[in-house]
Image 1 (cartoon, rainbow, N blue to C red):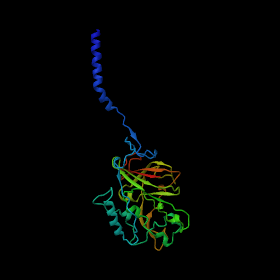
Image 2: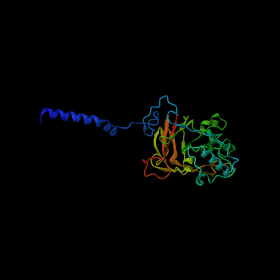
Image 3: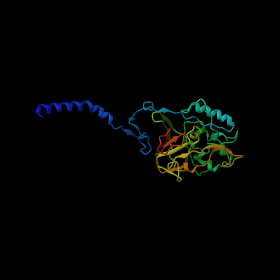
Image 4: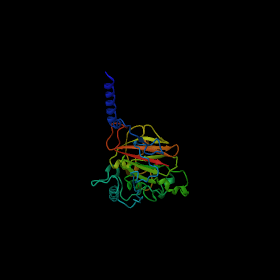
Length: 300
């Protein structure tokens, strides 16, 4: 092969490589991922990288969700609460024309019966059996009135005298301080201003009613579950409902959430703390299955 022929082949090779290299680059380009919540590195859902410094919720594609006020249900019938529930669902992310409240979740509500109240949430264990246990807005109204709160939170109470200021501290109502939805990754994020290390539990009333029966906590930070197995060790099916129960020991009982689910009970080791929860309408193949929707809870 003469020098002229070699030169010609080298030139052709260079031209071909130059032409196809952009295509090869696109084919083998590595996508960049970053955590949803950069401050809470253990609670994240992979999303395409998007810097959020100094960006508003709107600029980040987040929808700010309204936290509806609590209410006193004591004078209401079950049908009244059904109508109220329909109203709030119609204003939520889960609006649908044929929505009917779940009979499993709400069907055992007693008409015009007492409800556990929120006024003495900070020391509720000290007022069991007295009129104070039903005073104030109804405890379950924070969930019934807020369908977007797919997984709610309840806390234990302090062992303090009922006339102590801590008894009336509204932080024990455990209501989100901010609430957003990211449609891009189907994720609701609820943030709480909370520094109490005592016993807590997750509540699946809304998830159960809206068809998200199954859940799995895929990541946590500074959270210790009470028992094993629990919602972070295996896919869990919510069992929450509201009925007329006797734990309040007041008159003929109070409408309240039940049953106690040890798999959902936990406490904190430090703050900030967080959960990432995957939710499914049908039982998934396993805990690694893609969620129908994600729910992130942050305590800071």
